[in-house]
Amino acid sequence: MSYISPSYSRSAELFLEAQNLFPGGVNSPVRAFSQVGGTPLFITKAKGPMVWDEDGNSYIDYVGSYGPAILGHAHPEVAESITNALNHGFSFGSPTAKETKLAKMIMELMPSIEMLRFVSSGTEACMSAIRVARGYTGRDKIIKFSGCYHGHADMLLVQAGSGAASCGVPVSPGVTSKAAFDTLVAPYNDLEAVEDLFCEYKDQIAAIIVEPIVGNCSFIRPVAGFLEGLRQICTDQKALLIFDEVMTGFRVGLSGVQGLVQCKPDITTLGKVIGGGLPIGAFGGSREIMKRVAPMGAIYQAGTLSGNPISVSCGIKTLELLREKYCFTFLSAHVKRLLSGLKQVASDNNIPFVADSEGGMFGFSFSEKSITNSEDMAATNSQIFTRFFHKMLEGGIYLAPSAYEAGFVSFAHSNDEIDKTITIASKVFPLLKKDV
Ligand SMILES: *Cc1c(COP(=O)(O)O)cnc(C)c1O
Image 1 (cartoon, rainbow, N blue to C red):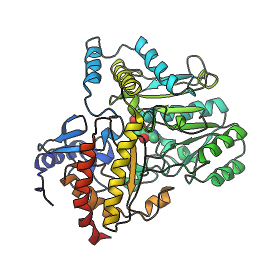
Image 2 (tube, rainbow, N blue to C red):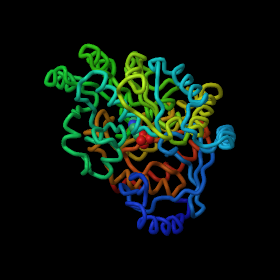
Image 3 (cartoon, helix red, strand yellow):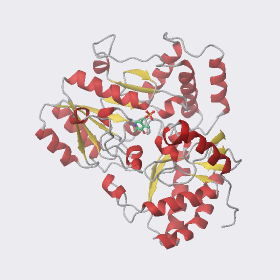
Image 4 (cartoon, helix red, strand yellow):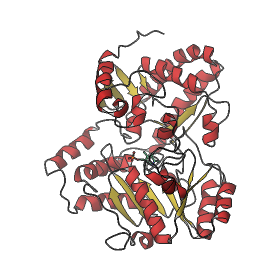
């Protein structure tokens, strides 16, 4: 390699101290690098497509805070709107005009949402959406797909994707068998399995929750007809279809996956990009369903910091810029340039490698065949991923420290960063060969 191996000594020191204070030294498991080993980077600042660690190393960032940073880090116009909002107070526990503004922006871009509620995380959004689906239908059971992640609420922590798979704990201790009892699991892209569940549990299934493009089990695209098939089954069986667009919303395109396919969900969950990097989540759907939520209806749901004015200000500016200044076709082309470069380098070195993307979200795997469900993903080569991850990091490229996480390109990434990434990869791939 043409570069000198960087030092991570300050990060290592901080990690040692943090391990005494936080389980695994972190406040969310994937950050601990436990899947790839080594020292997690302690980040001091981020700007545009770059992040800097405590040792002064800089990296081209493809983590993007696991999704929210679609405009790149610390976009000046977004920073300005946060600063302005800060001067007016941080939280009121009262409604604000800003919440109305952000809700209207979301609904304009996702017309399947006629009413919504803001919460503080994607986890809360999915947890609440399930409660609403159960309350609305009067049924208890839900279907989720193996490999899909919908946050860490008990009933959804059943054969979850990235976070849980990374730890090798598919069903977490502390989740009671009763909480998991009403969660039925089907393989992704398998309509027949879903039909079978509806036969077996006739009139008992409240909803199907699905990542309409999976980003928590590497990157899995729905096969043609899969989402449309789910829509048809739900309509026929009077169950609700929930699209978890926490990751894909305003990331794969301006209207999420529901803007790209021919079918609409009954309920959508959102998070990540709609807060532009500050904590937020939302769930919404038809007026008919959402009017059942308290205080209009009897289905309880609440939050002290829900619709927080700083998060909402950050979200409004982020969506405004996405709508008015930036173009997803351009972002898509950037991501495709990155992936075709990586595929070329992999094939030059005879290393099995597949990659796919939609808008600003991508995934790659060391595999002969493309990934269609969590079983395919489990069969990929994790040792070679680990080696690739570390060598890319040494070369100044920050990828997610888990083969199960999607990658994110922002509007701040230019051809320069993309091409530099491919150049580093062209030096890294030959080093991987002995592991194949
Ligand atoms: C990140 C994510 C969640 C959970 O959101 P948090 O804000 O981390 O609670 C839920 N669903 C999907 C698809 C996600 O990617």
